[in-house]
Length: 134
Length: 58
Picture 1 (cartoon, each protein chain N blue to C red):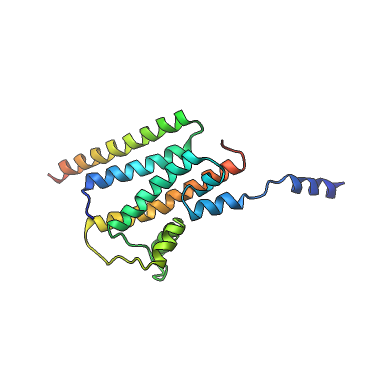
Picture 2: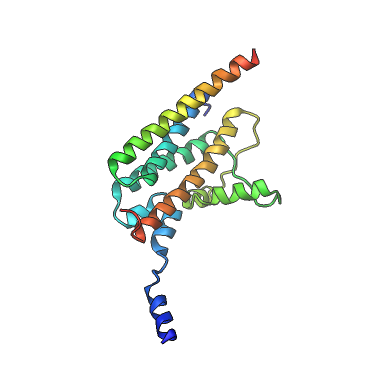
């Protein structure tokens, strides 16, 4: 009897919605597009694209994983959350020179915050997928 | 590209408030109000802190 109850509980446990989460990571707003939230997805894509590409235009730098510093490692993970934007920029060889200009420092923060905001988008897509939000 | 500090702060506030507004509330009306509130707070606090630092520096 106990075994049967456990099995029923396991069946009731909702599965993790992989599709919206992965789509949301790869493309900001992608999880919303996948669930037909076109307007919200477009707003998220526009806002995060704006930050990311302005960050690149301002010669912002990506954090490197190789330095061994905790701050740099966390920064790298934040950058990585931009998904295809980050991977594409890396693949295409984007690497800004070290610059003392304040704009370059702003650019670095823009790139990082674009990734961190995408985490919020992924979590929102997850909430929609499990029915917690509309 | 070298935007001014104010332009950078404005663009940053705009993008962040859009994402916060879209992801934080349940209805479109609430999202709009929250996004505008966050945007205004970003600008007010940024400008307030800038003026404060200006007077401290003097």
